[in-house]
Amino acid sequence: MPNHPHDCGHDHCDHPHGPRHIYIYSPSGAVRDKAAFKRGIARLQAMGHEVEVDHDALASHTRFAGDDATRLAAIHRAAASGADVALISRGGYGLTRILPGIQYKAVAKAVERGTQFVGVSDFTAFQSALLAKTGATTWAGPALVGDLGVPGEPDDIMLACLDDLLAGHGEGSGWRMNAEKPRADGQPAVRDIYVKKATLWGGNLAVLCSLVGTPYFPQVKGGVLFLEDVGEHPYRVERLLTQLLHAGVLAQQKAVVLGQFNEYKLTPHDKGFKLQSVVDWLRTQIKAPVLTNLPFGHVPTKVLLPVGAEVSLSVEGRDALIYWGHAH
Image 1 (cartoon, one colour):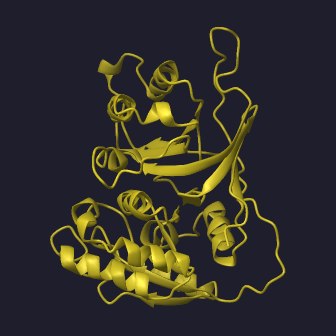
Image 2 (cartoon, rainbow, N blue to C red):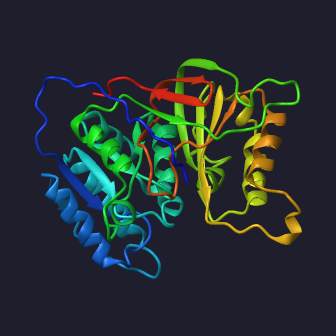
């Protein structure tokens, strides 16, 4: 868990920002926690926004939020809604199996008209496919149930970043990387760098790897690739990374940014093998810098990141900043 201050980074522009139209839909797993669903909606309404709920948002078909046709229709209704933000209810699983049925041009037109698609986890499949097919930008960020529907107060950094997106203020995200031992040659684990004009992309590592070799995997060269995962032992994380490595994906990036990897258990068999071991190994395999501790993943504290946008990336000591400028 990151516990350092983070900065959503914005300037204050003069044009008015009133209530926003937010469309809630369910393209992946079924919503089981109806109370959290209601809390999330109430919270957005309390922030002054108009919330429109897709009529199949609470549909259930085995583990999915409705059958494949139902979830595809929900995506297309979200695209046709004219909403400022289309926010998923939750992740889970379900998008990879319906990727061939998504009308990507219609979704890209919705983005062009100003609808920001926001989500996390399984949503990586949708974001990657849309980027691969159209180049359109979406946002890696919260989900309604898990982030806005929590029983207590939602994370203040996540809320501030979401508010920046809703107000059109978001310009970048800064964070503090993990303290790491210097390299054998005395150099810091991550040298000071400045990368300009790179495509930001990525998301959930397992979902992204499931798209390698398909038409839904973005062919990004010279990008900034960010990755996170949950419930994956470090050796599984490393195995997923070897897929991206051997597929030639990692060698084409200007930087790899690791978010939060959590909810796994080490075992006596590991004998000291841990997540840091994976980070150390990765740095021996690629020339690009490997950054750590990006506040994004299956954790309460998450920033919002524009997938597909052109960004700059800077590192000074342990301070890192991804900057995309005014997005509207």
